[in-house]
Length: 565
Image (cartoon, rainbow, N blue to C red; front, side, top):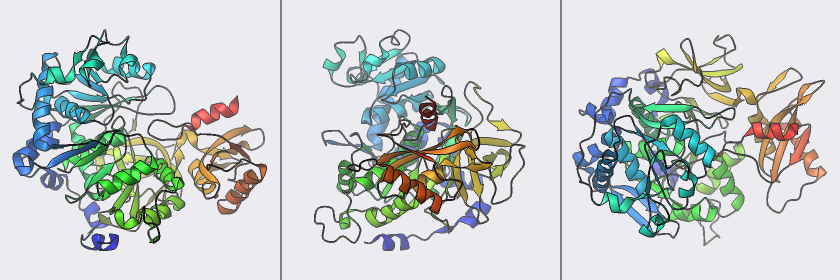
């Protein structure tokens, strides 16, 4: 069946009708039916109720390890395993509200531990596997982490921290010989296979996140159970996740997009989620999509650009390719988050993955709030970050907290009193004031158009002011990317005595392309021609790789520091 015929079999709701008539009580009924208490424990919401309601034998997780070995776990199997780990945690003295962490790759054990933590009424804290000692210590000290589950590859990072925290080793018994830790398998198998979920208030946290901010220490974000309906809204109406989908979110659950929407969201909906333990590789990604007949895919623009530059995906009409002919791809829709998609990548996805891609915006603090919606009918020009997620009221404000008219750049804000699905109430340890009056301030500069779409310009501290003009780095970067020799780009402002700042582009060239003054001039001319005469980069520097957060966001503050040296 072709992509178009798949889409035609599923009628779309009108975005404006659903948004204008949004009702939280109706949404809760849609999610939980007559069992509203299921929302008072995240394990119940994401696993226990599915076992009760006839989905016990449905596959909840498909995991593929680095050797290609596939493991499947049903909701029933997750139910039993999470009960055993919950009993283990209780034996360690973990109580309601305590923090439990993992530093593990995408494994079945990680998912079981998450569910077990929730079942007990404790708070799950992700530790990304690329973190070093300082990042781990900062997060554990802040959260007073009670238990950490890790493996032999990461255990040495906790050498000085194990004195204050219970450590559990996941892996073979031999992995544990060098450390005086409890062994996961040995301890879990001894535990009772039942555990009564602890019901909490919807304000109670179930996830402890930390922002990946570019300035200062990471800020704590305690995600309450009240976030579950917002996660569902995104999965159901922006991603258009259906019961028939094979859904793969490529994001690592050590970060918000993976934890919110590769674990919590799909399981909340009773869907199967897919884990690929292997590190990103374009060939592996293509093969994984084919092998598991993935129909609904989520990832970041960085991943799509890497897929594009690899050349391993055949064009949709490339019938001559016997190895990677796209009739072997089952993709129905693609989702992108983390940074803005440019026109070239959007076109590549449509032509090489054979389906529509929707760009979607969110934050660790808020989850996704502004989206192109696969399951709601609305017009959304390429380059837009979409329209407000139902249940959220968004505005653009100036420095005086006044709402700006369409067409003017300002800070994106959420109107809290008019956003029934909005759940963020402030940083965990009050590290920063996030609210002014009735507004949550995102710190992102955007522009609203008359059609209701929002257009991203950049973080407030990334905006470049040159000769009195405010220039969003994203606009410059996307235009530079249109040059055929460019793989990645980042734009910053560098001080200039006359203009205040000049625009400088850092450019990563495609493999096999050598840097030259000629290419640098072509890039300048392209941006001057395609964007504007005041917004072109007066400096172009070629660089081997851009500094990024582990979630793939460009760290422009590091480039500003590099430029100042």
